[in-house]
Amino acid sequence: MKYIDKLRNSGLRPTKQRLQICEVLFDTEKTFHFTINDLEKKIKKQVSNKISLATIYNTVHAFEKKGYLKQIPINSNQTYFDTNISDHHHFYDLKDEKLIDLEHSDVGPINILKKIDGKKIKSVEVLVKLED
Amino acid sequence: MKYIDKLRNSGLRPTKQRLQICEVLFDTEKTFHFTINDLEKKIKKQVSNKISLATIYNTVHAFEKKGYLKQIPINSNQTYFDTNISDHHHFYDLKDEKLIDLEHSDVGPINILKKIDGKKIKSVEVLVKLED
DNA sequence: TGCTAGTTTATAATGATTCTAAAAAGGTGT
DNA sequence: ACACCTTTTTAGAATCATTATAAACTAGCA
Image (cartoon, rainbow over all chains, first blue to last red; front, side, top):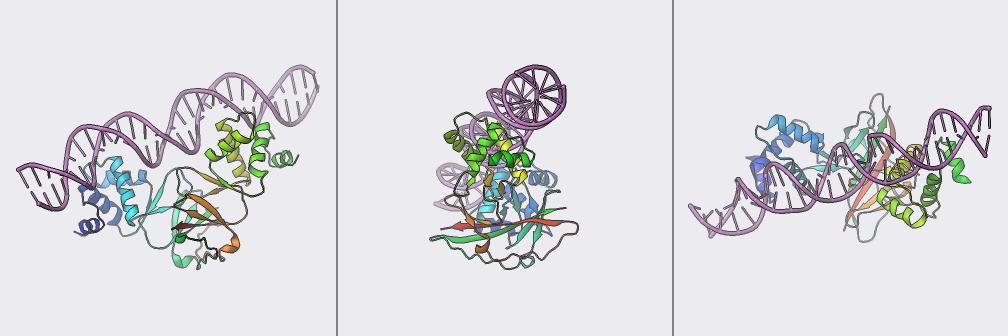
């Protein structure tokens, strides 16, 4: 099974709950954005047994740490995650409160000219806010 | 008084509390980043009378709406604000949890190639995460 | 099978932010 | 200065996402 290996290879035990969450997150044609609340609802629909909220939080954080999910920097009372872990950016529609992917190629190259001694760049994230 | 006019001109009554918060926020040589918690402490130090936490929240939101403050999009449990309202971006030092200004000239021009029908771009914000 | 560390779980705790509704203060006209 | 009305301030309660707790469970391995 693909997810069993994926989890084992990153040092996470392939528990029933984690495998089921993998299916909800990664067995999809398209990648998507979600909050914990969104994910909880999706799990309720797609998974027969109950998975506790604490486990959902634990799992999402574990996956994020391992690089299977990305957090999206945005000012909202809830944290947004993305199953699209490729290097890309986002539109944020202020009215609909919805995120839209911006492919890397939709944004010209970004060149950070300033350097900070002893630090290196981990990521560059662009958020483009949209209004009507 | 400069702040009285500033507030009046934007339709905000120049109350004692708002004027005192203006002094804490804008009577500084350099601009700075802050959370509500940071600002509360600064006010306690610099202002003799007490200003309630609710007023601090109300005032910061009012100032943000009027464009005197900017919210910084970042994943944190607290909301960060910036007294620097010029068009600029940020480094975020993951270890020290500190924000550092990136002048607009420190980041090459950013060209958003994708368009969304009926929407226009309100802002483009870049967050550069730093690690050791 | 039995052990042990890693996981899950329900629930409580935390903490930032927002709400409430009563008191206070600003602004205008008298 | 006073009355009046609206806006603002305030303390405290309420909300809500997230994290902590600690007991029960489970995967992996000898």
